[in-house]
Image (cartoon, rainbow, N blue to C red; front, side, top):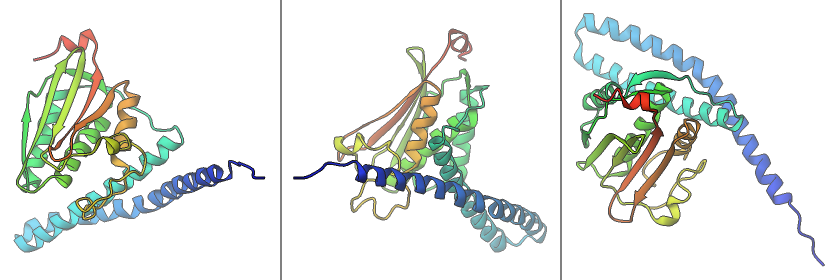
Length: 248
């Protein structure tokens, strides 16, 4: 005689709840000191410009980038906690998509020299959405392409108005992703485990957050890929007739 219980499922659910609570608490505790550290770095950068010490300025620039990276990770953890609590919200504003993309392009041109980034078909639409979160999604997709594709390869970012949707596509020349893993890729805490990804740090939350942000906007996100032939991540957001009429 044996009994089937749902105890393992309960334990798994409790583990997830604990992890979410832990992420939220730790992230809140780390956010304040990192914000203070960012302020100190900015003060030192201001003084270093007066000293005209190039090596010192370079060190401070590196510290600022690492600080920004840590703050980005913490914001990601907080987003995961908010999603789990149903508290991730949008601040809708009207903005020009081409301006947003050009700003992102300029940032990468100033900081990335390991890959060739090509921005094309930068559709200009007055989109009503959460500008910061849409930028977060685009940057996350581009960062993933940089992390998982060989140095020296090209990453293409396209933005266009197609079939009443604003569409973004980010294509890389990386190793590609199997169909099996594509089905899990946007799940919380999922990471592909193989020799190529072992050297890349991450927590498996970036694409999950992207999925939730796009879903809140009533849009769709997905991937086209096959092993050995790179990957193309994409998302599309519905646009109104009024928004379409502003295309430059």
